[in-house]
Length: 202
Ligand SMILES: [Zn+2]
Ligand SMILES: [Zn+2]
Image (cartoon, rainbow, N blue to C red; front, side, top):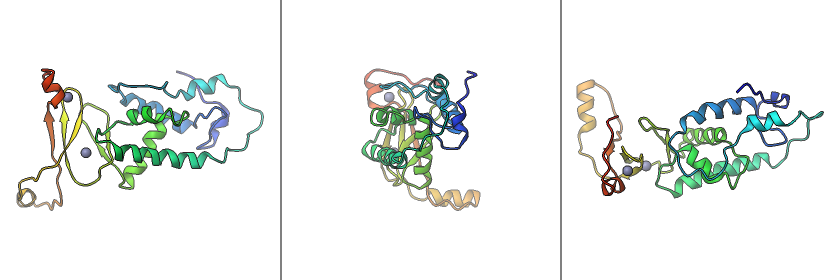
């Protein structure tokens, strides 16, 4: 859009008077926001750091960074983890952002993605890739399988005992040493069956 963040954002991680994030965050949020198609229930206005930054003249001197910032960031991450552990809906980053933006008005989608990445890296949550859709997030880290609805993209946990000997067959045929496996099922969820929906061929 040709709008650049104001010069106060030269330092990585800096935040302007309006709570806008630095250039890295801005670029990251803009890039990631392309992946958020198909998410309904947006209850808050998305964070628009570029427009806010452009509208505010740079202050003559840098003000002291607000002390509660770090505490706020920790709290945001904790809330994301709580939210994921409370739900079995496997939400997207955009849905998590929508759920928390009333509580944290300056929370950007880029920050949500970055925190989810950290939580996944620490093994507290799992990323669930979805074909033709944005990555979903799972607060349940114990091994389980998923059923993905091809119409409404709902994801449901599937916890059944799988036939034994699968790993051994893979080991013999490919001379690999699998330790675990996960199976994704695709089809129609209960709601879509009741509505008489038919899956598209993607
Ligand atoms: Zn469905
Ligand atoms: Zn799951």
